[in-house]
Each structure stands twice: as structure tokens, then as C-alpha cells.
Amino acid sequence: MRDGPVKLVVFDVDGTLVDSQHLIVAAQGMAFAEHGIEAPARAVALSVVGLSLPQAFRRLVGEDGPVEGLSESYKRAFNTLRLDPAYEEPLFPGMADLIERLRARDDLRLGVATGKSRRGVDRLIESHGWGDVFATIQTADDAPSKPDPAMLHQAMAEVGALPETTVMIGDTTYDMDMAVSAGAAAIGVAWGYHPPGALLGAGAVTVVETASALADMFSGNFRESGAGTSIGDLASD
Image (cartoon, rainbow, N blue to C red; front, side, top):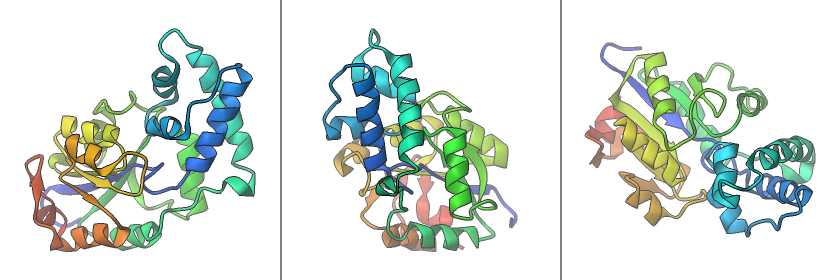
């Protein structure tokens, strides 16, 4: 790392790096069926992606619903379905190249903050050969659910980054709310599970349409500011 504050770029996983929507919806459907409850519509099912499982199911069935049982049923269904090629979890277009470009930079540290379990993140990292990519990994097993800022606080502490030199990239309002609460800059991606307008309303400094547009921001081409941070100044060489 060069002299100066550590610059940390933190990625959400589902809906940002990985297109896991078919697997998530199918696993939810199986979990609800196991409990004799009608599954939510697809849009509703995807609206809770990014939250920890208990938090997500509380949103879907309320505090008095079988939250713990649904969470356990979902885990079993997810682990079964992920072995089926029909439920592949591909990276979104351009994200593999972006990660490779950023990992080569000596002025940035990369991290993950996700509602997935540690085991799920480990599988993702192994499958893409990312074992040496992320300097900090925060999961649902390590901290309170988004939008609580604990994941980002822990990530910054682990690498020695400051809020004003940290960027959170995600597809949901939970990611944006978490970043704002932690004092970091928030960047939304338009290919995920919450609409761009909601991301901007939750504090995103911008919402990018493609991975190449996101890459441009980290080439120093973006000069908007938010959360007290200039993204271009933060990420440029």
C-alpha cells in the first residue's frame, strides 16, 4: 500500500457481484411450502435479499410468523438447489474483469459485506479463485444484519480504513443505508434487486448501469461527491 489512508472498496454479493435470484426465489418457495404457507411474489421475495435470514423472514411473515423454522428450511433448500445446474449463480457481466482490475491496484483494499453466510461466501471465493482478493469479509455470521453499520465498521477496523476513504457498492437500500450510517460513500448498481430511485433516495451518490461504468469511476473519471467523499479523488491513482 502507498502512503496515506487506506482506501477500501466493499462489495455486496447477491444482486451486486452474483446473479442468484433464481436460486433465492426457488429456495424461498421450498421453505414456505414446507411450512404450508403461500410463498411471496417474486418481487417481494427479492426485496429482502441482502438481509440476514431471520431479518428477511420477519419482513415476509411478521414477528409472529415461523421465522426460525423458515430460516432453517431455506438453508436446507438452498444447499440442495445450489447443486442443480439449473440454479447456477453467475457473476453479473463485467464484474469478474472489474475485480481483476481492482485487485491489481496497490492503492486499494477490497472487501465484502453480505447477508450470506460465511460458508456461502467461502464457496463463492473458492469457485472464482478469489482467495487472495478480499482483505476483509463480513457476513451474516459476523455482525448484525444490514442496514446496521456494524459490518462496515468492522471492515474498516480490520484494514485500517477511515469512513471518508471507504466506498460501499451494492444493489439494495440496505447497502446504501449501511454505508451512510457508517459515514462511507455509497454507490448503487442498477442490475440488482432494488430500483435506482430507491437507491438514490437511500443515499447513493450515484447508480451505475454497467460494470464498465463502475470501472470508469475507479479510473478517476467520476467527480461527484457524497458522504463527504469525492469518489474520483478516493479511487484515482
